[in-house]
Amino acid sequence: MKNWVPLSDEQYRLVWGKFYKDFNFKPSIHSSDWPSYRLPIPFVSFDITEYTDDDIDDLEEKCITNFRAVTESDKYIYALDWQHQSYLYNPHLENGNASGRIGFYPDGDYYFFLNKDFKWGYLGHPWEQSISIFGEELIHQFEMNRPTIFGKIVRSNR
Image (cartoon, rainbow, N blue to C red; front, side):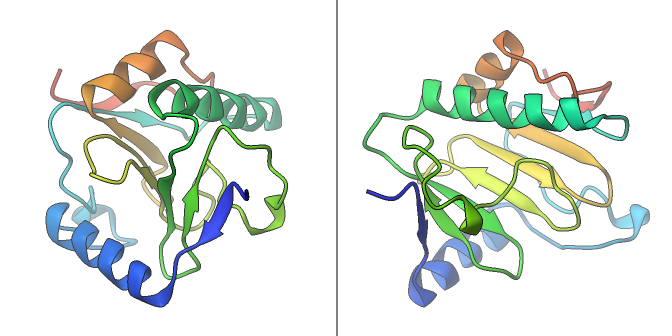
C-alpha cells in the first residue's frame, strides 16, 4: 500500500468543490483578504514566520505523529495542494513514495490536511504564514505535541 495516493480527476473536483463551499475559500495573496477561508469551530491559528530548518523537521515529525494519533491505521486523509496534484494520505505508512508528497510547511502554496468528513483539519496559509488547526480532537493532539515552529496564536475561538 502507498501512503500517498493521487486523487483521481473526479475526486479532485469533488473534494476541492466541497472545500471551497464549506470553508468559503477565497485564495488571495493580499493581507486585506485574509484569512482566505472560514474556519469551523473550534479552531486555533499559529504564526509561523520565525523558524529554522530544525523547526521544519520538527513540524514534519510532529504532524505525522499527531495525524497518526487521530487516524486509524487503515484510513486515509486528504492532503490537498492548491492548484496541484492532491492525495489521499495515510500517516501510518512509511514515506515510500515521498517524491509525490505534500509538505506540512506551506512554502508557497496552500497545503491542507483534512479527515474525509472534514471534522478536523490542518490548514497552511503560505502568504499569511500561518497554520490553522480545527476540530477538538486534532487541536488537543497538537496541544500535547506542539511543533516548535508554532509561534503566537493569531486567531482562536477557544
